[in-house]
Amino acid sequence: MSIVYSMTGFASAASASDESVGFSIAIKSVNHRFLDLHLRLPSYCDSLEIQLRRFLKEALKRGHIEVILQVERKTSAQIQLNTDLLGVYVTAFSQASALYNLPSQPDLNSLLRIPGVMSVETNIGSDGIPELDQAVMKVMPSLIEKLNEARAQEGAMLASELRGSMQRLKTFADEMAGLRNGVREAQFERLRTRLMELTSAGPVSEERILSEAAVLAEKSDIEEEIVRLKTHIDRFIGMLDAGGELGKRMDFLLQELNREANTMLSKTSAAAGDNSLRITELGLEIKAEIEKAREQVQNLE
Image (cartoon, rainbow, N blue to C red; front, side):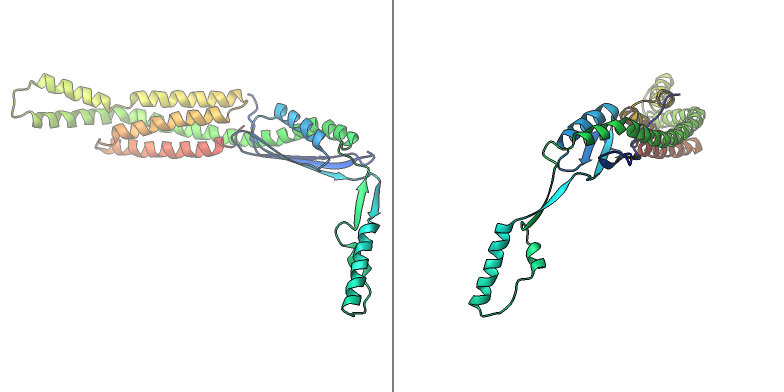
């Protein structure tokens, strides 16, 4: 039996303590119709982002993927003082004090907090840190493996729930099959009686009436729908056994199952009797079970 993957998962990794560039990286996946990548990286990681996007597109098929990279800067840094700008502010302060005859001294802490007066410069340029790119890409295969392990565990639970849903649908279909003959005969008798009443004033042979009644009763029979329903259920279970990328295909198949349920309800809506009422109940149960299955399928890759 092949693996079924959910689109929900989480994994994280960090650099070794003795590496020159420290970082931690986390990847989170939730359901999405397509592969939707969101990378939150430092501004100097443009080259790394390109590599990560290429790698993730090859490793994953569907899902909203969020990657967060945090870097511990072990690069040398220097504090730069903009003396020209600071001088302008000190001069302006002195002029304002003299102009309004307000003896006061400027507060150095306040001056240094003025934007642009002080700045921190590191040796990180626009090209980023090559060692960081290499270190991050080195851990990505194991990170995706951990993510897939989490997604496989979630997928196994979803597959188990879906198998239970398919078994319940098959049980409902089997019960319907046992009830349909009684409904068909009841429909036949009802139509026969009605046609006899409508044609009592004219010379219409009973053979013709029975023939017309049989045709109408046949149109209300749900045997074909039950057969197709069971076929779709078997195909659904076969897809679960095969594993792989299932979400979209299973969603389409559940639409077909729902269509068969709607047709059965439409055909039996005018029928009378206990069997017909039970078939209607079963049809509604089938639709509810299909809807539950669709909610689960939305989370499959």
